[in-house]
Length: 381
Image 1 (cartoon, rainbow, N blue to C red):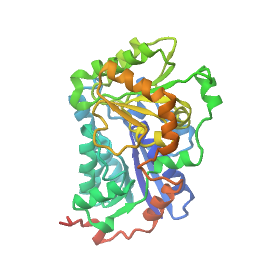
Image 2 (image 1 turned 135 degrees about the horizontal axis):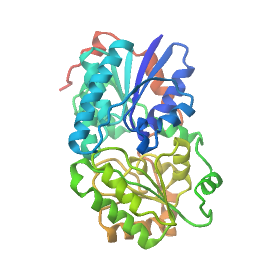
Image 3 (image 1 turned 180 degrees about the vertical axis):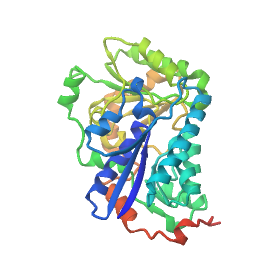
Image 4 (image 1 turned 90 degrees about the vertical axis):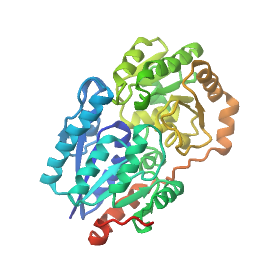
């Protein structure tokens, strides 16, 4: 029986791996070890580990790593702490394959450790472009990974141009879309009841994270977005950011903007979050879910700033600088009937998903031959 070790340190990552774990549970010749770390374990961010527990997933290890302060220096030191901890976990558990998701620092640290310990590494969402330090981490993981799961043909082609051998690249699609295709999200009546919203009145979902390279302007950027929302006065559900450098300041700003029409949540379950995407009239901020999940619902997404720069996007995305008047104009356009009608006619998701992506990934994890050819990588050019 093969044991697959997975890491999750953020809410977005968990959306990648939850449907895959469900498929592993069905396979008679696979088992999994789930390591939960970083944001999931922090009380000030809502302890999303409790949602993982409610989902019934078995947690093999909880690794505390996050130093307080949420500065670039504390972020770097936190990753160093995690690297030491995950090395001990890998030594003790000896997994057959490490499955990494996305572009977060914890995933990169695990890749470094597993690569040096001669453990096969598989990588979900390989080859994509994104801004911020996350984009650099994603491509660094590529160099360590032995198996690449690409969510689009564009990502697969980029992996080839990076010199990755074609035999390692699998065009599987994006696993976080599986649950959307299966309808595993809260319906409108549940969402409006939970957040005390009028189902006849449009509302906006707000999710904005700090941009590491723009640490000093974090407060200003989120203030610009919130000022635009306040000028329009549209009902808004706002969710706390991740815990990257700048998040403490971002959270302080967000708390100052509590209004009767702005509801602030520290954390939400994946099912409720997807329900918000399904029921909202628009979203605003810089979350990748505006580019990956939102097109499935033809949801207009106002993408603020540089965090998603260069990433594939559908016609639902309106890119805008972090400036109040520009954000307001973009949000008004996103909320307009004309823009929504246009999306109903031509919105296409560039990220592939048919409800069976996780099955394809798990089948490869089951059957891939773990031998010298897999473990000893060569650059193709």
